[in-house]
Each structure stands twice: as C-alpha cells, then as structure tokens.
Amino acid sequence: MRRNRRTRMPHVLALDQGTTSSRAIVFDASGAVRATAQQEFRQIYPQGGWVEHDAVEIWATQSGVMHEAIAKAGIAARDVAAIGITNQRETTVLWERATGRPLARAIVWQDRRTEPRCRALREAGHSERVKATTGLVLDPYFSGTKAAYLLDQVEGARDRAARGEIAFGTVDSYLVFRLSGGAVHSTDVTNASRTMLMSLA
Image 1 (tube, helix red, strand yellow):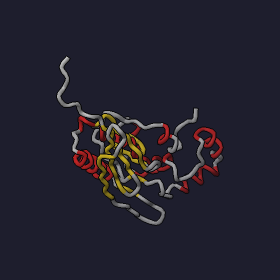
Image 2 (image 1 turned 135 degrees about the vertical axis):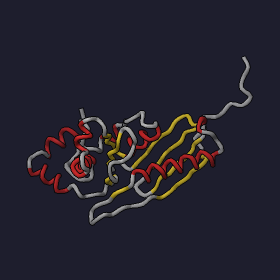
Image 3 (image 1 turned 120 degrees about the vertical axis):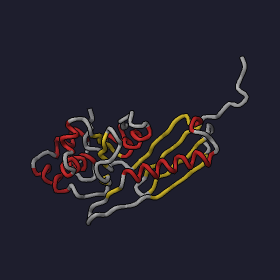
Image 4 (image 1 turned 180 degrees about the vertical axis):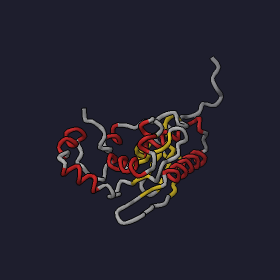
C-alpha cells in the first residue's frame, strides 16, 4: 500500500468565549499549545444593574481569533480534528433561525433586570417547584427569566418563537449555530443546567 508522503497531524481548536474577550487556542496531537489569539469586545451598560453584549460582535471576535490562531499555528482548517467550546454560561441570546441575526443584544449573566419577575414568581409560590425541577433557585442570574424578558420586550418575538422562527440559547449554542452555518442548534448538559429550564430528570 502506498502511503502519503506527508501525514498531517490532527489538531484541536479550543474556543474560549469569556465575558470580556474571545480567545482561541490550537493544540497539537501531543497536547502542546501551537498558537493562541485573543480579542476583547464591548461591555454595554444601558442602565444600573443591566449588562449587555452584542452577539454579532461576539461571533465576529470569536471567528476572528479562530482564524488567527489557525494561521499562527501554520495549519489549515482541515487539520483541525475537533473544536471545543468553553463559554460564559448564563448569558442569553435569541436569534433568527433563518439568518442567525440576534433579535436584541444578549443579556449577560451579571444582569439583574429580571429580579422583579423572579420576586413575583417567588411570591406566587413557585420557588420549591423550580428548585425541585431544575436544582436552581429563582434568580436573575440564570437564563430562563432573561429569555422571557426578551420574548416580551422584542416586538413580535413571542409569536415568531411560537412559529419556530426564533432560537434561544446560551453563548455556546449561538457559536455552534454560527460555526455550523445554521445547521445545528444544540447545547450540552453543563450549559443547559444553568438556564433554569432543564429538568434534572
């Protein structure tokens, strides 16, 4: 059997999408770091207690550092055997399935604007049910009330969501959607468990 003159080594690309910057790291088959790249993005504070990110900017910076790290490592995209994502967890994004366009700015995990909704749910006696179902307390930190807020505040969002036109996710879901050209809408248990929407069962 004839062998290729050059056997290309597989690499792993790690995407680290943090609260203040996007980072990419290329590892070779031995686990050694071949290249890194990092870029900060804007923190948006519309008013006290509110924190937002532009999901388009998150994608632009993450895509940019991904390509930069691959180029610095001296490899091609076909040499990447797998991509891993670590991300800011509870930050909430709603976007159009057809285009990937966010409906509004992402609401960041630190944001406290949904405290009144959480308080109303607590006062209505829902705390124990939420904790028993999801393992979480009713708090604006988690994604559930952030998603509800966006569905209520963005004109037509609830109707569009009911028609299946809108996708919800934490930042990992948005990145996977963009990386797959809109073919994949997914998350993993570690991110889903921080949404206040995942049943422990």
